[in-house]
Length: 190
Image (cartoon, rainbow, N blue to C red):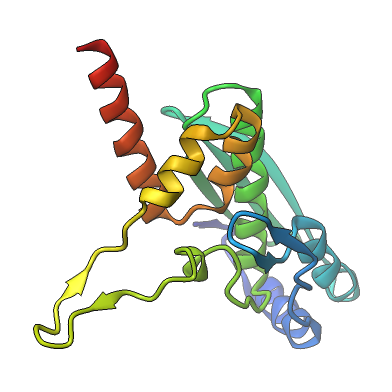
């Protein structure tokens, strides 16, 4: 995180704005996981009036660093004080659609985090196929989730649907899909 030399005024304004903000409405549904989540427009709607009433504004700038895309989010106050942070995400589909999806995802999460908008679980923790970790009662040991169904759906999907699916995957699911896809590529080449 970067910031102006002083953050007294922006901290006070942000505190007041957060006191007036309600959670972002879950206005969209991830069809793959059948879970609702707050779209970027809902996040913006939740902060628009409280920010304006307290002299706050924000700007988000796309960034690309070492194969990752994301945004730099700058929170500004009429006093001239500011805070900024950059969120970069890996992109599996190296084209405009993949970059656009990652940027939108980064904008939503970065803005929600920086503004302090309350968040219910959306397509993050609850997206692991709505599964709870499987435990063997007799051994009490954790069994890793089986992502075979996700991997098969992902492989069978069109590129457009894969992009949509990818945005809703947890980090664990993305790692499983990446591993499966690289194993498929190695087998095809071998």
